[in-house]
Length: 334
Image 1 (cartoon, rainbow, N blue to C red):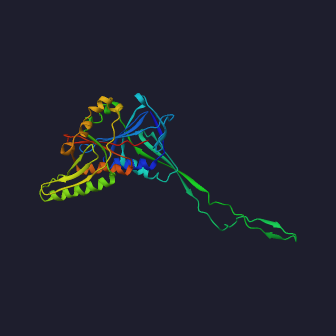
Image 2 (tube, rainbow, N blue to C red):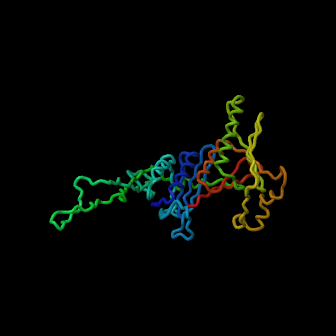
Image 3 (cartoon, rainbow, N blue to C red):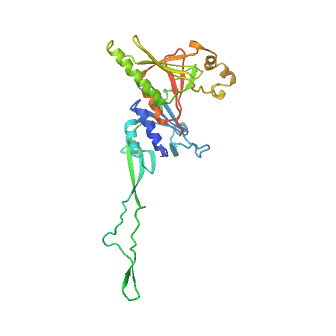
């Protein structure tokens, strides 16, 4: 069983692991020939299925912001699959130390029969330059016509461009999961969405959502010991999005217009006929209140999910007209 890769885009990897660590402390990481998948399945709350696609070997269409390069994996399982249980906080701590590294690599190894993810980084530290000669430094002299020596401008060694490279390895203890222990775990299967829409900037959405959640907590604090922080999210296939809070004594909402509803790819939904019969196509024809798909989400979980906004990129929200849940897709180019 072997796994090794160079970490090319270390800052993106740090942000990804940090976002995941806010949603769970331990992740199931599935490595194979084509992708690295991070899965977090808490006892209750938000599940995470984050997929990092791997550049081909050799790359057919390289991704400019790839996280992993020189990716090597080998195991006895189909597609060279390796399943690991990885603690995210130690992994994030190790990655942060590599922010200023000139190179970084990660590999699966074993020490004292304990499986480890080893992060090896190389850093370069400039040596301090000196403008004055040290004791014993050599100056140049040459004989003059009178037999005495004439001083020549001393030639000191130039060390301002010199640097010292340091190699640091940090080990993160992991657990190798047998294939039988994870074969029954599958990503939740959601029916086709009624509405799919590109969300506004996530950090802006997160800020508004957190304010609404605090209002909900404050409103319920005097009435119940178990405060409900359900937010109502609704959207149309005409570029409209609303997020609101409705309680017995409060009703407030924010609204966005002119957002983009991405066109469906016929190859992904089963052909042109499937596009015509898709729920979102029918929703395009609806106006007024009938054209809104509405879901209710737990405000605190929703705020943690929106933390992926630190990764940048765009996020598509898929909403279901009657289901009280919402599926979100974000693929990070790797």
